[in-house]
Length: 252
Image (cartoon, rainbow, N blue to C red; front, top):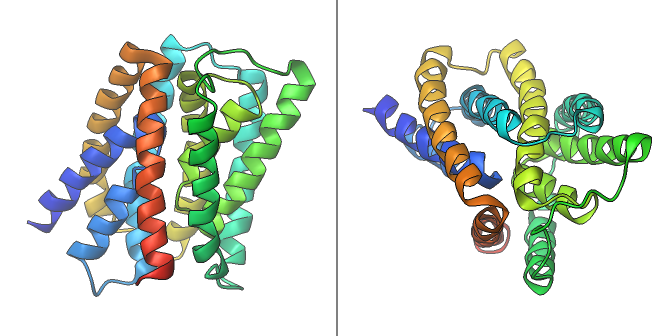
């Protein structure tokens, strides 16, 4: 029964994550609810082990239909991997609790800006070319990758927002690019959890399959309806993130 419940949660998480990120909002609470006495690192390891397959397959699906800017995204993914490793190491040294109260405030700013700029992310008009774009994307990969390893909530949404706001991508291209970067940061975290023995592989295999199915459905929907649809889902996911992180920070 436990495997069925978390697999259904993994499918839904893959669906949401493929469109705009935020699948962890669904899968992580489900894992903690089903296995309340299990070490948190193990549940986070299971989450990464399942979700990396969904983000990986979403990247592949998007790459077939979207003009991915590989010259910038490959080094950005490498930087995200390195940043995630660094953040995961730092969290073993200091606590990330100080971010709990800051995160919902940052997300409110992201949401307010997105709502105020109604044309934001509707048109794909990259602001940089060549090395400029590569360095800008690499900076995003490194900073958000570090955040993902150190704390994590909202990583996909931050990737999407910065790719739209700073690099000038539309929401569809930003979501596609974010999947590649998020796959790299998930891989770094998964390696660390696996080395520490915090991954239930017998659960991960089934949950990964469910996550991939959800991811393929979400990707297809995003590609069919385009940037405007992804923008709407982005606003919805960030709104839920604000409620969730705000509750965790100030009410729990």
